[in-house]
Length: 119
Image (cartoon, rainbow, N blue to C red; front, side, top):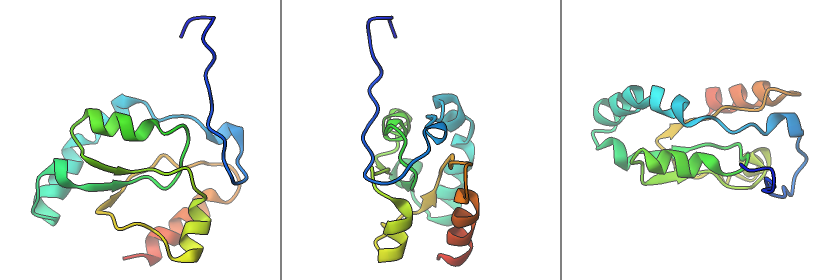
């Protein structure tokens, strides 16, 4: 970005820690493409592009554009409070949860509790 451009950050309707809002670089998603391909073809018997990917932690929304640029057509990453979504039972259906979670506070504990108790 040039010095004249200001980076805009989305407003969150839930409590956040600014140090947790670091977008995952595209290369990280490129690095896991073989794994996603394996999961798609061996577990779900479908094309990798048809996987439903879910990142429950919204940063600036970059995950959608990055994964879409790699050919994935359904990427869920919404500017909502993940923990409230879980509490209300509104977690969307997905094939693969993929995230670079926030590391402050008890986020890791809550995420691990979710993934070990969900189907």
